[in-house]
Image 1 (cartoon, rainbow, N blue to C red):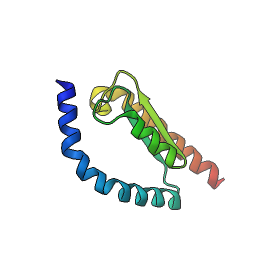
Image 2 (cartoon, rainbow, N blue to C red; image 1 turned 135 degrees about the horizontal axis):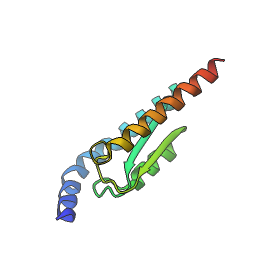
Image 3 (tube, helix red, strand yellow; image 1 turned 120 degrees about the vertical axis):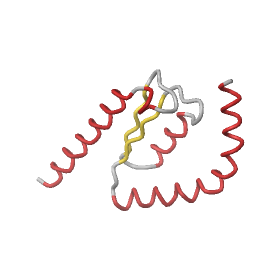
Length: 105
């Protein structure tokens, strides 16, 4: 059943997304680089809808991105592993506050 749902989603979303993905990604990458925007990507290791390779490629194409892979988690980390998800957000925010404070000192 999961494979059927995955195939249906890919066939419905893929043509629309393919048209816009390149432009959106290019604009996001330019803005992120120009303004040094910190980025955290949280991805469920067992996500069958969006492959982890997508997040790996995105994190590699941007500078200073933190990629967190949550094991035993699928497509919705905030729902499937809320404690882990919140802990990663808190860790990321704390590290960015520390980095910002150190740059200002």
